[in-house]
Image 1 (cartoon, rainbow over the protein chains, first blue to last red):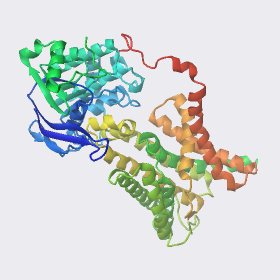
Image 2 (image 1 turned 90 degrees about the vertical axis):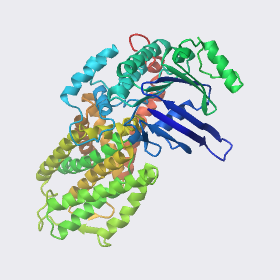
Image 3 (image 1 turned 180 degrees about the vertical axis):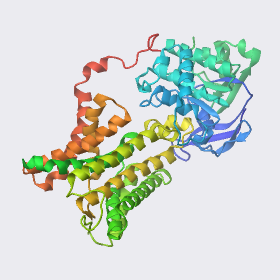
Image 4 (image 1 turned 180 degrees about the horizontal axis):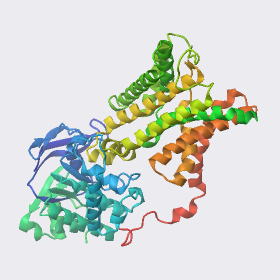
Length: 264
Length: 305
């Protein structure tokens, strides 16, 4: 489903701020894989997702989604394949537009937009039912401006938008990091539900080792711009946080450091 | 009494500037771009229309050609900004300067061209203010209906999201660059349309027409929205509010002239109105909102999650 070959990206090359963010990264995701991604500060996790979604072009290497080489495709064209949820709850929705307007834009991701009505009548009913599954009471607030919702509500709507039109690949960039623990747990449950129901191939960055172990069927750990640990199947199920810390120390020769990592 | 006599004229001119403010609304409020092209494109609209009419082209056709000319000026600014990476403010200033030369060329090097209402059939003119108000009102109603319909189409919705949240738009497959060009084209088309009406109303196109138009447009927007958002914050009400803002602006303008203010100071007055409208919300938030700041904007937990 996703095939990344020898991906390299250096920020600010030739300056004192030079930073090798991706250093020959290879990654191959099978159809239906739910991969959690962990790694210390500056390991290149977000850079990886940005490279896949086309925020900028890599210096070297290729990205293939579902057999299509998207390396030279601009961001808005790649969106056809991707569902994305960002860390910042403000980033994934249009605050000054109604919930139903946001959803209708997402429902047409990857299609040619025309000069026909942007929201059909049948859509409203469909969205109402989908919003009801969130159990946040949003089904009666279709015409509410998204900017009036809380961070958790916005993240839930963004998740819905990312999966409304089935993406080939779902990219979640620490999408619960900015939420309080209780809300984060709810959004994570919703993520599991949507991914399982739609059998979505998913790449989820998290700073929470516990979440990384509990969710998905595969776990990768990044360090200095490439994948250092890749565990799946039964091995992943048996994994503990201590194991992960040990694996990290072995792979990098350092203690695991992440100012946000929650170890419990 | 003098004031009442001036009122129909103020309303007619206010309507035309209100139409221009609707153009500014599309770029400033919807696309979130302060587009300075309008100072040039309103003049382009006026010049194109005046020259066409002088050449014997029917007034309605001249107005359409002026609209198309405005669309082109918007595309130029849009491409400066998106294709060439020039910051939007500067892109607008560059086009505005280009248009000064272009407008002079359109006027064949003259600084003024007259449109005679007696020898040409015009859509509106200063002699018949009632007729002008009706004509301008009908055109404005048409523009508002078309914009309202457009912003509920698939394309129109993404134009709104482009200004509101470009990151989200890109993630949803929206070509943000294309939308910015499209929005600036629509905006400047409407501005040039207003310019064309203005030239007919005043009976002339002047190379200096439109200097400070962006400021008048913003003033109309701020005055209008300060009222319309309290009624209903949707697009149609906002646009009607903007038209109202244009009329209020011109009534104040005429009133101030009657009070004996030298016309030299009028541009300064426009700028001060805009500055006040921009500064008041900022200062309010800074000095008078201390109580609100204590209440968290979005609390977590079951109720809000």
